[in-house]
Length: 249
Image (cartoon, rainbow, N blue to C red; front, side, top):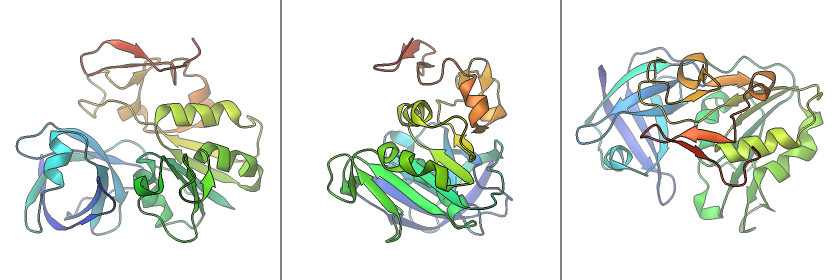
C-alpha cells in the first residue's frame, strides 16, 4: 500500500469535496485507486485529475469518505493502484455526459481533451465541478434544462464522434435504452459497481461474469449491450443479489 500527503482539500458543494494529493504514480484518465484512511474501509475512488498533482472528487456517504472530508494539508492518505483501463484518446467532436458523481471520473478527460459537457443532478445544489460553458440539467429545473441529463443529451448524439459517459447505473441504462445503436459516435461508459478488492478476485463487481474492476471500468457500447444483468441486478455488500427498481427482467 502506498501513501501520500494531502496538498489541499476543497468543498465543492454541501457534501462533495476535491482532495489533491502528492504522489508520483502514473495514471490515465478513467483509472481508479483503492483508498483507505484509519478508521474507515478501503473503497474505490476515481481520479478526477491524473495530471501532477493527482486529485479525487467524492461525495460523503460513509465512514471513509466522511473521514477524508476532515483531512487537512499535510495529513496522509493510503491507497493501492491505479487500477483498471482508461478512456481511449478521442478524435473529432467530443461529448461528456455525467450524472451523480460521474463527473468526477470524466473530469480527468475533460482536463486533457476539449469537448461539450452535459452534467445532471437533482437540484442546482447537487452540482459540482461545473463551468459556465457546461450544458446543465436538473430534475427540478433549478438550473439549466428541467429534466435528466439523458433527456438533455440524447437529441444531440448525432453531433458527436466520441461520447464518454459516467453516472449511476439506472441513468446509464436509460441512456443506452434511448440512443440510436447505429449512431456514428463511438460511445464509452465508465461503469460504477460495488468493489471490494479492485483486482478481480472478490467478484462483487461482476456483471455477467465480467469484472468491472479488472476488465474495465471503461467499456464500449457494444460490450455493455451484451451485459444482460446491467441495469437489472447487482450484488449488495453481503453478496446478495438485488434488483433495480423498475428494471426490465
